[in-house]
Structure formats: C-alpha cells, structure tokens
Image (cartoon, rainbow, N blue to C red; front, side, top):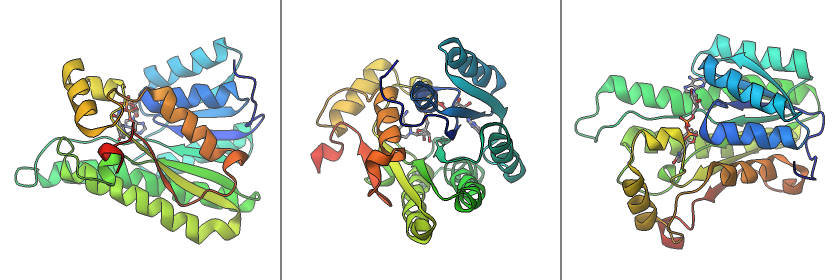
Length: 255
Ligand SMILES: NC(=O)c1ccc[n+]([C@@H]2O[C@H](COP(=O)([O-])OP(=O)(O)OC[C@H]3O[C@@H](n4cnc5c(N)ncnc54)[C@H](O)[C@@H]3O)[C@@H](O)[C@H]2O)c1
C-alpha cells in the first residue's frame, strides 16, 4: 500500500474498471483511500476487481453499467453518490474500436466506435458535472489516445476521430466548468499492455508498434497510466486543466 492517501473518503467513479487501465486505476484510487465505484459492463470482471480491492482492505462497489446508454450512466452516478457521497472524481475510461480503413469501414462499425469511445465520454460528463457543480467541484479525467493526436497507422479512422473528440471535449468542458471548480483533463496512452491490446496484437507486434512510434521501446504498463490519472485528479494538479497528457514513451518520436 502506498503511503499517500490523496483521495481519503472521496467518492470516485471509474468506468471500464473491470480490466486493463481502468482496473489499474480502480486499485490505485482505492489504495489512496477512495470509495471507488466500479462502473463496468461485464459483471464477472467488475465483481472480480471489487473483490480484489476489498481483499486488500480498500473500499469499492460494483455497479453494472453500460457506458453507452444514458439511463445506465445516470443510474450509476446516482448509485455512486448515494452509496459513497457525491461524486468528486471521475475517470471516464471506456473506449474500443472495430477495425477497418476509410475505404472499407462500415457505417455500423464507425457508429459503434464513436458511441463507445466518444459518446460514452459525453454521457458520463453530462451526468457527473451537475453532481460536482452542486457539491463544490471535482475533477474528471477522460481516456483519449495518442491516436487522437497523431496519425497512427494501426488505428482505425473512427477510433482516431473519436479520441480526437475526447481530447477536444475534455478541453471544452474544462473551459466551460472552471467557474464551477471542476477540472477536466484527458490522458493519452501509447500502446498499453492490456487485455484489449493482447486481443489485437501478438507480443511481437506490440514490441514492433512500440519501437516504431515511441522513443522508449516498450509498451506502457496500465499502472503507469493510472499514476498519471491519479496525479491529474489530485490537488497536486490543482492548476492543470484542459490538457491532454501523453503517457506514451515519447510517442511520435518525442515530437
Ligand atoms: N491499451 C492501449 O494500448 C490503449 C491505448 C490508447 C488508449 N486506450 C484506451 O484506454 C481505455 C481502456 O482500454 P484498455 O486497453 O484498458 O481496455 P480493456 O479492454 O482491457 O478494458 C476495457 C474495459 O471496459 C469494459 N467495457 C467495455 N464496454 C463497456 C461499456 N459499454 N460500458 C462499461 N464498460 C465497458 C470492458 O468490459 C473492459 O473491462 C479505452 O478507452 C481505450 O481506447 C488503450
């Protein structure tokens, strides 16, 4: 357990907390004293992360959530606030992609990727901001991607466009809600060693992609993204808002 307790007793939401980056962030928040709401579609994964946090002495609840459905997101935020107190910190992390080039991507796959990667971010912020506003403020970190900032040949155009949207929507929200004491940032992972990536690339391909795009030639580890999310959510980052922070081993060759 870390010595720092920056989120002691605070109500924190993590979406997509059943695996990968979200799972790492849920553990990290809990280790710093947060009351974590695991907002996850897959009940088996959500319950497993909750149980692992409880077993370490942390505090967490699993709330079954589909981050792409407004009623589900609204109900999750209400449940989190009822159980843990008004939500103070949110990590809106759900995102995914279906493959396809500009020429062969179907409209259905384009829509699916935009909905899960960008619309989910809108829905979460739409319902988190009023709770934070009514309770003196808060912080939001949204998961974008390096693919939303630079051309990444391995990423489909729908995903790149959605993640560019996440970066901009975060900046928009930061400007619109600074007056409400709400800070909003996005985190831009490079290729990160999670189950999602394991399903898309072999280990050899992962190493090739990391070497091609990054100054540091290895995949990012989920805990390395989580550490930045916690920093951005904490009072240590009180003067950082509207930024898209890369955690990508010097992605785009440091440029
Ligand atoms: N892994 C990478 O290399 C990488 C790089 C850049 C950005 N990202 C982004 O990081 C985020 C997390 O990715 P990851 O690699 O940890 O993925 P992951 O697949 O390991 O975890 C995603 C989790 O989200 C859950 N989920 C999926 N759809 C959901 C929904 N509709 N509602 C609620 N939960 C849902 C899944 O069940 C899973 O537990 C995504 O936004 C992804 O686009 C990942």
